[in-house]
Image: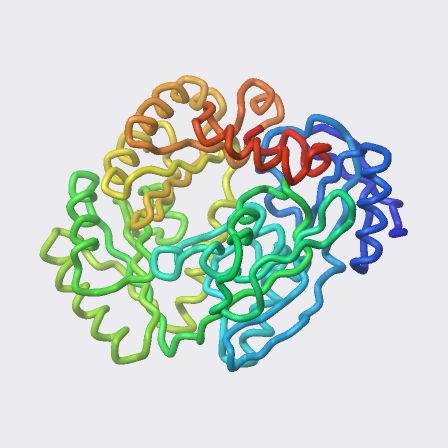
Length: 405
């Protein structure tokens, strides 16, 4: 059995024993023992996104999966890799870089965050506009159930399409359906060139500028909109809304797109403030990816139609001055005080519901979580998710209470 000399608390529930597992057999024994006792199981990795979710409904045991960090198979020519779920994202990227490949998913604090944790939270960042999210890259998965049995879905080749696509079921499930132990990912070649262009625009012209990007002749891989306060953290000269537009392609295509976009932005009233190329752009990409882990107070994530991003952000900025939007995808991230949230919550949720959107609190106090669900008001699809949970985890062992149930 793994050592359990350490403890952990999750949203005030605990202290619970922290079990550092070093093998699948150790994890299997731990799961079976916990199931026999009826103890809850809270899998953890780098613990960078442990704030996400409602408080647990009961105490239990927390297996630490960071010891499950091996590369199982890497046929680089097939553009796939199979790894254990406890591997750190930065280590995974270093392995892929040895073959001039990468997983184009931006996760905050990759030196700490694990692949399994990123999958559980469906973490993504600025490059999601051009390259998608983890749902697009997980092609095979192994998950341990309450009996300690590993169930496999998908496969190790991209063209494996047999059976139900259970891989996507576990992406974003917050570890409530079992413990992800192994993952097969499809990967991409590293781009020859990278560029990030920063352009400022007045609040009244933000919507027009974003509309221009949607019909642009260029093909950005990232369209980010930063409020004046957020932009000033990166660019002290910025006093207006700032758009960061990213390109990653071969060198000729990247250069053409940057110059073409310069002209298009000038035509819609935006002023190009800064341009970063290749290695000098890397710290900016990392700053954007890490942005959700910054700030204090209540952090939130709003999803809405991309055409509504400018309208929503302009309305919100007075109460939440620090905003970053994945504008091409209709995702707005921000932080505000608990008092501001209390006054705005009903109105924000009503507005987002009218657009078929949602509001999720990604970080807040335990007291606020106990007052209302961080996932927002119940939706029609919650019953389906609860039914799936009941079938895959009938004893409610895995992360009970943390997700929409």
